[in-house]
Length: 157
Image 1 (cartoon, rainbow, N blue to C red):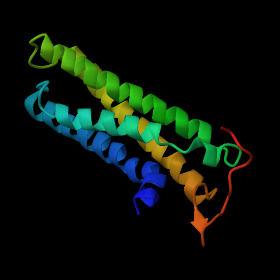
Image 2: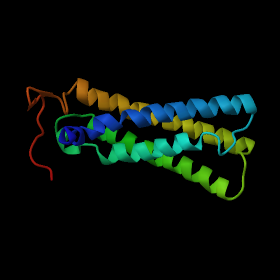
Image 3: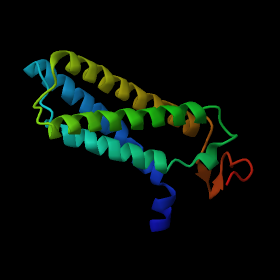
Image 4: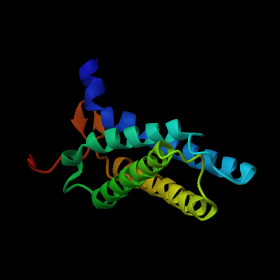
């Protein structure tokens, strides 16, 4: 069973950054509109979890299963990479500001931060969309009776 889980880590993990980044973005928008500011420590753990799960998801992506079998791999992978870096930078900026003793974003910085957070949400949803296209349209990673529906082409190791 452990081997089965390890072989399916990517499809298990990818749902976490999608959900967490969406929740983090909605959280920050609600707090910002209600309070007219965003305390830097409020919700930071959501974004740290989003960054970590993004890195785990990218690291477990089974590119060899898809290479040559789908036209969606490149855009999916690119959007996932962009998501991971953007979310990591958002976390780093917040942590640096916290370490420097800042309590919240200034108005212009808050607007910029929220635009980038919304963009990260768009990137992760786009990555999820194209990942879904690879699975549901092209059968990447799908097996029936132990046989791949769309087996990998060649050995890419």
